[in-house]
Image (cartoon, rainbow, N blue to C red; front, side, top):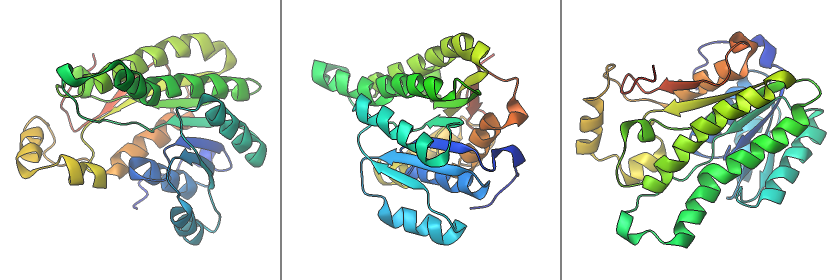
Length: 255
């Protein structure tokens, strides 16, 4: 992974990433380790092999805690463990999500609750615990939203609804937590071509259609998102809070 910039103040910081063992999350773990941060992440699937890869690459291991982010108590206990292990808690990146496709007539109450638990509820309670752990000295929270709700994307309404909620939640928490020197921003990526996207939905026709909506005629890669998260986590953006920053190649505007 190419490192485009060095954020010196991130070195030595304690970072917690949800879903940090696969997809964009794995790139985030790699990116923060490259900056000298102490990284912990939670994920459902065993990430031992990924941890070994990161240890070999960086000379130190990220802390992997296996578990389901919809289990609020386990999620918050994991964050406490990360803080105890790394001697503090400076940065939270709420990255884990499920953009499962569905149609209106087939959505059940249980399915709706499950999607919101993954894509919105877990974000809120991770922020709640981060605020407790950051209270003494401040910190930065980056919540992954998506341009899908800004575009009015069809075929996954439960997901786009959660994304809209994440952006609204980030703005409200920024106001509430500002006096504690805790910054809260949302990041709305465009279509990033992870292995999951390529396997499930990125047909040649879909890719061409989406690229036609972008100002920049190049597909997004995980590194594009890593760079934005590092910026939002660093003191380089110290007076940015309550914002939704879009990284999508120029599909939507937020102003």
